[in-house]
Length: 146
Image 1 (cartoon, rainbow, N blue to C red):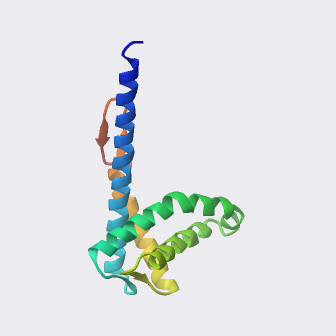
Image 2 (image 1 turned 90 degrees about the vertical axis):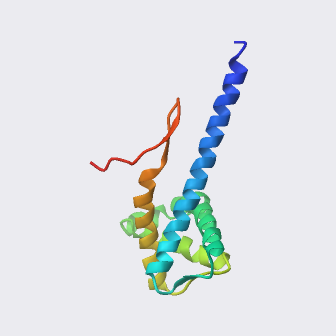
Image 3 (image 1 turned 30 degrees about the horizontal axis):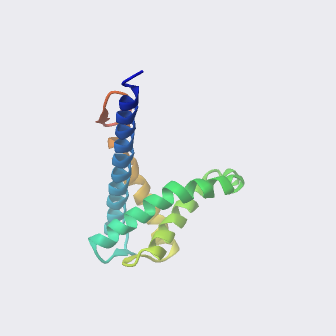
């Protein structure tokens, strides 16, 4: 019992490091996904890499905190549209990011729809490198697709 306080403190530090690493990884993946959307989709523009990083942060925070609330509120609509409502929520988050971040612009329904698809695809591909928490250590692995 004597040393259990320091062991708990060390485990808490490791958990905090894991959470910080996951936050930074998500920010990086979202920024890369938005950058690919800027590169591929015509009417989605970014004035600088700083604006792209800010857009990645806003997009990640909106996806983390706002999206679950919107999904909860929109469950009947999501069920009624066989899941297309989730895509519309993703489009809303892209639009909201463009509205909040100066220097990041997305104009029009179809460019935002294309950007949402590109962001989703890049997130799927890059999230395979996500940090997985193990009780003994944190490792970065590629998810097996088979």
